[in-house]
Length: 130
Image (cartoon, rainbow, N blue to C red; front, side):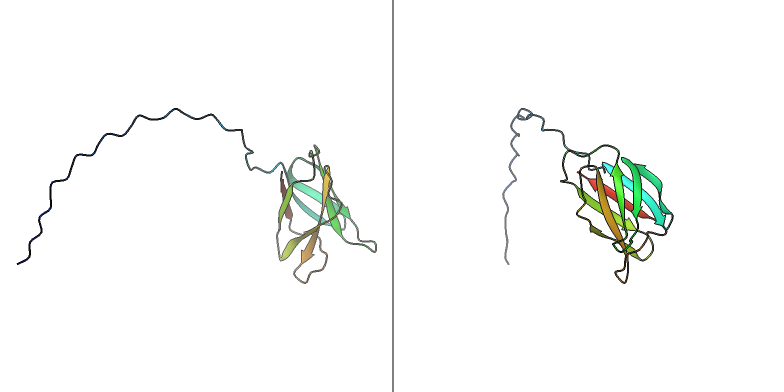
């Protein structure tokens, strides 16, 4: 027959001492939105249901132009290097961000599924991360 012999397993050596703790890194951002708003809107204007860092929301009537909403910030950002995210309830979506982005406001469009301008109806949630 065939026979295999294995030698004894050696003893594991000790680990070295733990090194010194490194310097603490700079504080990062929490990832929480600096500005957020849940609102509804229609012909009568916009109604803020809940918000952080938003002083008002204005419905900009089309009047030959584009229907959109401007969110005015309570405290201006240092610059316009922030990202805008959103969700609209009920077969609609948050459209393009208009060129009127400033340190103190952002203007957004809401579209229905056919791509036409629309009011948010049941509600829109917009949040901004800087």
